[in-house]
Image (cartoon, rainbow, N blue to C red; front, top):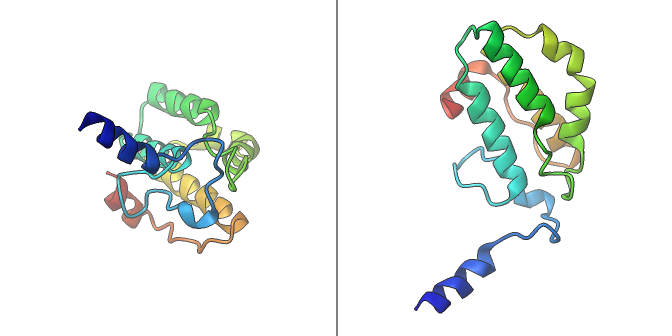
Length: 136
């Protein structure tokens, strides 16, 4: 019984050496069950930023900046490549100016859209009200 379960489970796992195709990325927009490590990364980012207070303390702002800047990019070995890492690097000065949850959340959505565009996926709405309803 257990062996049968393990065999079924192993068929569902996406291994790092298998590059997920563009259509395999949903960025966890419709579900809280990521189908690969890259989608899990985006879910973690959205959930973490959404959990900030609307006007975070200085300590919380510094913590989220450090988190965003140092999160290992789980998408590098996929068709998305280093899109997230590159956008964070290019946004470093901008991230230092953000003082609200809204700014971080909309920025993340815009980064996601740039990554979506790179792999030929449709862009999504970055309206704050929709983002916070989805992720909070």
